[in-house]
Image (cartoon, rainbow, N blue to C red; front, side):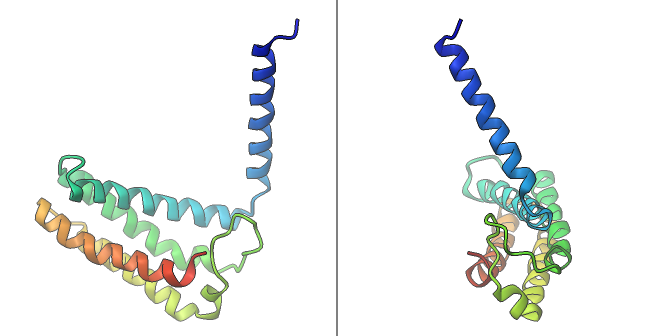
Length: 146
């Protein structure tokens, strides 16, 4: 018997399949870039929530977040070597490949800022390290991200 519940389950299943099919069709280079940048963003948010006092300062967690950002920042040039920007989900501007040296320098600055924060041991040190880190993100995003 067809019920509202079975209709809802069917709609959810179709939606899940459509989402999975769309994700599978996404350019793997774009997907890899977005995954790495997503990890940078989530770790930056973890640091920011400590700086704001939304969560208690945890030196080990902050250091691990800076380390993860540094790791992903080191990967950025390789992730963007292939100019694959035709995927509708791509947020990278063509300016990346037109200004490759500047883009890779900005990735290097992100890595250095993250490495500088890897030894934070107090809320004050965390706040001091957060400023340069967030500035490197802004510098790149304002120029190279849609």
